[in-house]
Amino acid sequence: MKLILVSGARPNFMKVAPLIWELKKRRARSASFPIRHLLVHTGQHYDRDMMAVFFKEFELPEPDINLGVGSGSHAVQTAKIMIHFEKVCKKEKPDMVVVVGDVNSTIACTLVACKLGIRTAHVEAGLRSFDRTMPEEVNRILTDLISDLLFTSCPEANRNLAREGIPPEKIHFVGNIMVDSLVRNRPRAAKMKVYRDFGQKKGRYAVLTLHRPSNVDRDDSLGNILSALRVVSKEIPIIFPVHPRTQKQLIKYGYDRSLNADSPLVLTNPLGYLEFLSLLLGARFVLTDSGGIQEETTALGIPCLTLRENTERPITVSMGTNRVIGSEKQRIILECRKILEGKGKAARGIPDLWDGRTAGRIVDVFLKNGG
Image 1: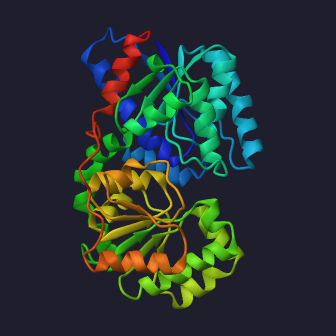
Image 2: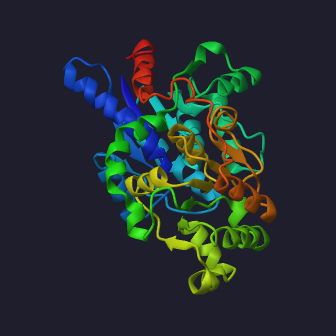
Image 3: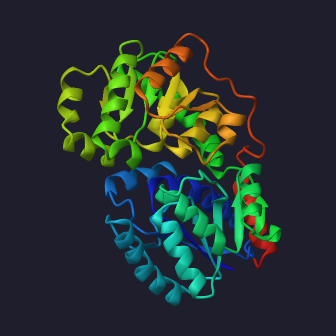
């Protein structure tokens, strides 16, 4: 069985890496192991220095194929990926294409494979925000609709797929593959104590990530969030690794000057996975609009405030440490102060199958379905 594993953006590598580790481990155990794989990087995130750090940290070889599509509008980027990936599929003739997450690469490669009659598998299927203004939501829904194997991380995802009419034999509850990466890398990250590089002490700072278009692509929404965080950061330091997209918007709206001049926020360039995980491990709480960080903070038991109106990961709210608070200034300040007063949200427990063994369960399904 020949697999093509597709990755397009940095968060995708956190989900693809455990599959590569598992496949490599099983091949080492048995020369007759029946699955081969190729890693295809679409180049949707194309900063070579940032990606090189990821390959090193995740102990991954260079991708077998790099499509190098770069940036563009959703339509342009998706079309470029489809054109290049079709050539790869026709040449390599895989038995299955495996996609992860919800980026443009996910839906583009699934469409190509489906139209060529190649089976597809979607890792992290069934997540829904029920907000179709989010491009990721459209990608998720369409990818799940035409995939052959759907690997879910929580019971809610199974229920979402059932409501959408997906046959139950396609759905496999395997757990959260992001946690596989977390479990493997946590010991290394804990030793790094990166917060010291920013002059901070464990448990006495917060971490912020911000990149969603709804938050950073409008002057009013971005300004509102920054105004709230200026207040909060006078009460607790906030370390802010700035996403390249966010950096462009800060410059566009002129916030870069005020942040660099008089803001108590601690700004830094994007961090590698291990550095960022080290920061999370020492944080009092996290503010984010990232889906993956909602999961990581739940797995780590760290309070999380999600700066969005909805989440496609409701289990992080029902069982985990996450509160979805939107982006209104006073609400952000109020929720941060609750945590500082010891009233942060405690987790009810770790969600089922978030145990670091999801990749093994996925490979078992592959073996039962043609390996």
